[in-house]
Length: 98
Image (cartoon, rainbow, N blue to C red; front, top):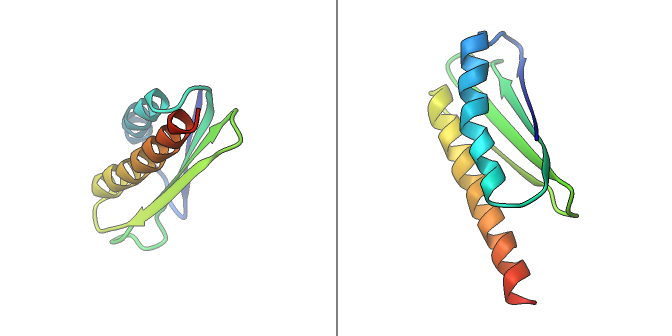
């Protein structure tokens, strides 16, 4: 699984990038065969960062979510929650229809 953390309109420290990567790596446990997780932190508005996460799978389904808030870590937690809901719903549809 490849994790890529990028910043737009600003810079993230290496420590912040590592913490973000540690949090999003847990998304791989919900759906098998995750190939990439792309995280984009938009710092255009310094008081309201936007976090966008895309989970790319080898299946025919990709998962995307974004959130804007006054706190970077709060944004990341909300995005992870949204993606977990999407993945659980997708996985339940797969298992229910078999």
